[in-house]
Image 1 (tube, one colour):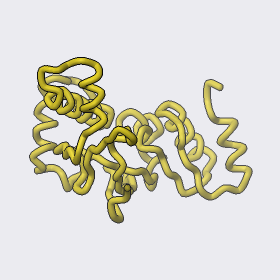
Image 2 (cartoon, helix red, strand yellow):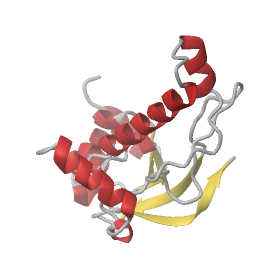
Image 3 (cartoon, rainbow, N blue to C red):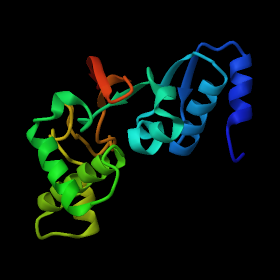
Length: 188
Protein backbone atom coordinates (compact mmCIF):
# COMPACT_ATOMS: atom_id res chain seq x y z
CA UNK A 1 0.00 0.00 0.00
CA UNK A 2 1.24 3.53 -0.72
CA UNK A 3 0.02 4.68 2.71
CA UNK A 4 -0.83 3.07 6.03
CA UNK A 5 -4.01 5.10 6.56
CA UNK A 6 -6.44 2.19 6.28
CA UNK A 7 -4.38 0.09 8.70
CA UNK A 8 -4.30 2.94 11.24
CA UNK A 9 -8.08 3.37 11.01
CA UNK A 10 -8.53 -0.38 11.70
CA UNK A 11 -6.11 -0.30 14.62
CA UNK A 12 -7.88 2.66 16.20
CA UNK A 13 -11.20 0.83 15.86
CA UNK A 14 -9.70 -2.14 17.72
CA UNK A 15 -9.59 -0.10 20.93
CA UNK A 16 -5.82 -0.44 21.29
CA UNK A 17 -4.26 2.08 23.66
CA UNK A 18 -0.61 1.37 22.75
CA UNK A 19 0.86 1.78 19.27
CA UNK A 20 4.35 0.67 18.28
CA UNK A 21 5.70 2.28 15.13
CA UNK A 22 7.58 -0.80 13.93
CA UNK A 23 8.25 0.45 10.44
CA UNK A 24 10.74 2.43 8.44
CA UNK A 25 10.79 6.23 8.43
CA UNK A 26 8.26 6.86 5.62
CA UNK A 27 5.49 4.74 7.09
CA UNK A 28 6.25 5.80 10.66
CA UNK A 29 5.73 9.46 9.64
CA UNK A 30 2.50 8.53 7.86
CA UNK A 31 1.17 6.62 10.87
CA UNK A 32 2.06 9.43 13.31
CA UNK A 33 0.23 11.93 11.14
CA UNK A 34 -2.84 9.70 10.65
CA UNK A 35 -3.08 8.92 14.38
CA UNK A 36 -3.20 12.66 15.07
CA UNK A 37 -5.76 13.29 12.31
CA UNK A 38 -8.03 10.65 13.84
CA UNK A 39 -7.71 12.19 17.31
CA UNK A 40 -6.51 8.82 18.59
CA UNK A 41 -4.39 9.09 21.75
CA UNK A 42 -2.54 5.78 22.26
CA UNK A 43 0.81 5.69 24.03
CA UNK A 44 3.21 5.59 21.08
CA UNK A 45 6.58 3.91 20.86
CA UNK A 46 8.81 4.36 17.83
CA UNK A 47 11.75 2.23 16.79
CA UNK A 48 15.04 4.09 16.93
CA UNK A 49 15.41 3.88 13.14
CA UNK A 50 12.28 6.02 12.76
CA UNK A 51 13.00 8.54 15.51
CA UNK A 52 14.87 11.16 13.47
CA UNK A 53 13.46 14.61 14.19
CA UNK A 54 14.36 15.92 10.74
CA UNK A 55 13.61 12.85 8.63
CA UNK A 56 10.49 11.52 10.38
CA UNK A 57 8.98 13.72 13.09
CA UNK A 58 9.05 16.96 11.10
CA UNK A 59 7.29 15.39 8.06
CA UNK A 60 4.72 13.86 10.46
CA UNK A 61 4.11 17.29 12.01
CA UNK A 62 6.04 18.15 15.17
CA UNK A 63 2.82 18.78 17.12
CA UNK A 64 1.68 15.27 16.18
CA UNK A 65 4.78 13.66 17.67
CA UNK A 66 5.00 15.20 21.14
CA UNK A 67 5.05 12.42 23.73
CA UNK A 68 6.46 9.68 21.48
CA UNK A 69 8.80 7.28 23.27
CA UNK A 70 11.89 5.73 21.70
CA UNK A 71 15.15 4.10 22.67
CA UNK A 72 18.35 6.09 22.29
CA UNK A 73 21.99 5.14 22.27
CA UNK A 74 23.59 8.35 21.01
CA UNK A 75 23.66 11.94 22.13
CA UNK A 76 21.07 14.14 20.42
CA UNK A 77 22.53 17.47 19.21
CA UNK A 78 19.11 19.10 19.73
CA UNK A 79 19.10 18.15 23.44
CA UNK A 80 20.27 21.17 25.48
CA UNK A 81 22.14 18.95 27.95
CA UNK A 82 24.76 18.26 25.27
CA UNK A 83 25.19 21.84 23.97
CA UNK A 84 28.73 22.14 25.41
CA UNK A 85 29.68 18.48 25.04
CA UNK A 86 33.06 18.10 23.32
CA UNK A 87 31.88 15.26 21.05
CA UNK A 88 28.76 17.17 19.99
CA UNK A 89 30.80 20.31 19.27
CA UNK A 90 33.25 18.27 17.16
CA UNK A 91 30.38 16.62 15.28
CA UNK A 92 28.70 20.00 14.66
CA UNK A 93 31.95 21.48 13.31
CA UNK A 94 32.41 18.46 11.02
CA UNK A 95 28.76 18.69 9.96
CA UNK A 96 29.03 22.39 9.04
CA UNK A 97 32.21 21.76 7.07
CA UNK A 98 31.15 18.66 5.13
CA UNK A 99 27.35 18.90 4.99
CA UNK A 100 26.50 22.56 4.43
CA UNK A 101 22.78 22.96 3.88
CA UNK A 102 21.90 19.54 5.29
CA UNK A 103 19.33 19.22 8.07
CA UNK A 104 21.17 18.93 11.42
CA UNK A 105 18.04 17.44 13.04
CA UNK A 106 18.27 14.36 10.81
CA UNK A 107 19.81 11.78 13.14
CA UNK A 108 20.84 9.57 10.23
CA UNK A 109 23.90 11.83 9.87
CA UNK A 110 25.06 11.19 13.42
CA UNK A 111 24.50 7.46 12.90
CA UNK A 112 26.59 7.52 9.73
CA UNK A 113 29.31 9.49 11.53
CA UNK A 114 29.51 6.88 14.29
CA UNK A 115 29.40 4.02 11.78
CA UNK A 116 32.40 5.55 10.00
CA UNK A 117 34.27 5.84 13.31
CA UNK A 118 33.57 2.18 14.01
CA UNK A 119 34.80 1.12 10.56
CA UNK A 120 37.95 3.21 11.14
CA UNK A 121 38.48 1.38 14.44
CA UNK A 122 38.11 -2.02 12.75
CA UNK A 123 40.57 -1.05 10.00
CA UNK A 124 43.12 0.23 12.54
CA UNK A 125 42.80 -3.03 14.49
CA UNK A 126 43.42 -4.98 11.27
CA UNK A 127 46.62 -3.01 10.68
CA UNK A 128 48.32 -3.89 7.42
CA UNK A 129 46.41 -7.17 7.12
CA UNK A 130 43.44 -5.86 5.16
CA UNK A 131 42.14 -9.19 3.95
CA UNK A 132 38.45 -9.98 4.23
CA UNK A 133 39.23 -12.63 6.85
CA UNK A 134 41.24 -10.21 8.98
CA UNK A 135 38.68 -7.40 8.75
CA UNK A 136 35.81 -9.76 9.60
CA UNK A 137 37.79 -11.11 12.57
CA UNK A 138 38.32 -7.58 13.87
CA UNK A 139 34.67 -6.62 13.27
CA UNK A 140 33.62 -9.66 15.30
CA UNK A 141 35.94 -8.89 18.21
CA UNK A 142 35.29 -5.28 19.19
CA UNK A 143 35.76 -5.04 22.93
CA UNK A 144 34.17 -2.18 24.87
CA UNK A 145 34.76 0.45 22.16
CA UNK A 146 33.39 3.79 23.35
CA UNK A 147 32.45 6.25 20.67
CA UNK A 148 32.35 9.84 21.97
CA UNK A 149 28.79 10.40 20.69
CA UNK A 150 27.35 7.37 22.48
CA UNK A 151 25.37 7.98 25.65
CA UNK A 152 27.18 7.32 28.92
CA UNK A 153 27.10 3.60 29.68
CA UNK A 154 26.70 2.62 26.02
CA UNK A 155 29.52 0.96 24.09
CA UNK A 156 30.25 -1.04 20.97
CA UNK A 157 30.91 -4.71 21.63
CA UNK A 158 30.93 -7.71 19.31
CA UNK A 159 32.12 -11.30 19.44
CA UNK A 160 32.33 -14.32 17.15
CA UNK A 161 28.85 -15.28 18.38
CA UNK A 162 27.28 -11.83 18.86
CA UNK A 163 27.29 -9.42 15.93
CA UNK A 164 25.00 -6.77 17.47
CA UNK A 165 27.38 -3.89 18.13
CA UNK A 166 25.14 -1.77 20.38
CA UNK A 167 22.93 -3.50 22.91
CA UNK A 168 22.47 -0.81 25.55
CA UNK A 169 19.94 1.96 25.24
CA UNK A 170 18.01 4.49 27.26
CA UNK A 171 14.40 5.53 26.86
CA UNK A 172 13.60 9.03 25.61
CA UNK A 173 10.40 11.02 25.17
CA UNK A 174 9.96 13.69 22.50
CA UNK A 175 8.99 17.07 24.00
CA UNK A 176 8.41 18.91 20.73
CA UNK A 177 12.03 20.09 20.44
CA UNK A 178 14.30 17.24 21.52
CA UNK A 179 14.37 13.67 22.78
CA UNK A 180 14.49 13.88 26.58
CA UNK A 181 16.18 10.92 28.22
CA UNK A 182 14.54 9.21 31.18
CA UNK A 183 15.14 6.12 33.27
CA UNK A 184 18.28 4.07 33.33
CA UNK A 185 20.37 2.53 30.56
CA UNK A 186 19.06 -0.93 29.63
CA UNK A 187 20.82 -3.74 27.86
CA UNK A 188 22.79 -6.91 28.08
